Image 1 (cartoon, rainbow, N blue to C red):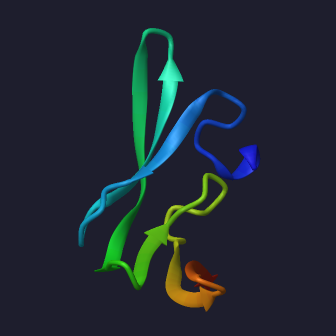
Image 2 (image 1 turned 180 degrees about the horizontal axis):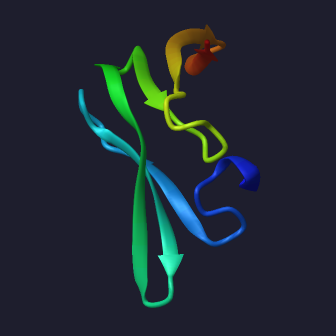
Length: 88
């Protein structure tokens, strides 16, 4: 929700650079320009199986951060596959 974003209720987006060491950042609309705030880094990049990144919410103290680990697993459903994920 808005209370965890740097942008708050303002318009913006969160983007992940798809590579080891890539930035997780929030781009916030600021008039005709955009303000970019880095909120984490990619720690594990193992497509299509796994991505792990550090993350700091806007309400975290300066020394606080957390890690988000997302693992994907393909599961056969009928004649096709479905990509499942689990976040730890």
